[in-house]
Amino acid sequence: MLELFIRQFELAVPLFILVALGYGLVKGAGWSKSVSDGMNTFVFNLAMPALLFHLMSDLSKLPPVDARLLAAFFGGCLLTFLLGYFLSGSLFSLDGTGKSILGLGGVFSNNVLIGIPLAKATLGNASIPSVALVLVFNSLTLWSLLSISIEWSKHGSMSIAGFRTTVFAIARNPIIIGIITGACFGLTGWVLPPVLEHTLVQVAEPSAALSLIVLGMGLAEYDVKAGWRQGTLIVALKLILQPLVVWALAALLGLPMMETKVVVLLASLPVGVNVYLMARQYQRLEGSVAASLVLTTVLSAITTPVFLVLLARAFPTGV
Image (cartoon, rainbow, N blue to C red; front, side):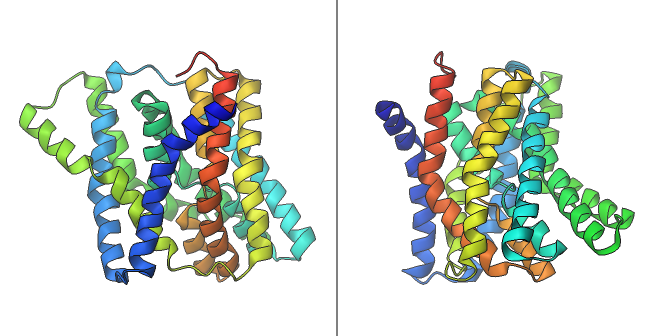
């Protein structure tokens, strides 16, 4: 067990060192927010879409994905969200919007900045189609869940206009565009000309490292001292409960090994920064969500390798 943990920790810890590097560049070296914003734009709008297009362009050569992983992952998200919603109401007497934000914090993973690099490092390129399938539906499903929860708590109904805006925003997301266009190209069985292939690789290669550095630079903006009580509940929901619930649903559905590993890995990741943006938009729990962003990123350097060890023991044949 200890040997397995050390092996998984050694695979994961370099990624978290890059997060710490980004944090240090802002806090220690004084890099400005404009640098962070520029790097973030490059990663999200060019480098990461290029990486995902390149990986998905080999889709015809990769093993098929069991789509039931969506039921396991998002079913686990729903159950954890509901528990967080009701617990936050009873423990902290939050209103409907506050309960919705806290519940979302317990289920919205940092699947792009950490999930993709970590899946590649620990599960291999064969995991990427499963990761991509979750990514395609992730924002739409979880933003819709939050919008429905908040609107229902306010008005007892859901705005169609709000849902339509969410769909259009996600359809324009460069990450989603990279996945879908890469998958469509991959399904044709065509091969990129060598010149284009080499160019694409050169753009995509730095995406994993830069995405983690950008994450660390972003974390430097948040104050972990504010809202620690609600933040602690988010940490427990996100790093412990959600991966356990997702794993239980995967087992009930009889998901294959790779899909089970992917959904549990993604569920074990730290809170995504989009939750903080939503907290600021609704002016609820900004300090608590900021604290959970930092704490879950730090603690997941331990908890995620633990879940990877447990998965390795559950599936001893390996990836």
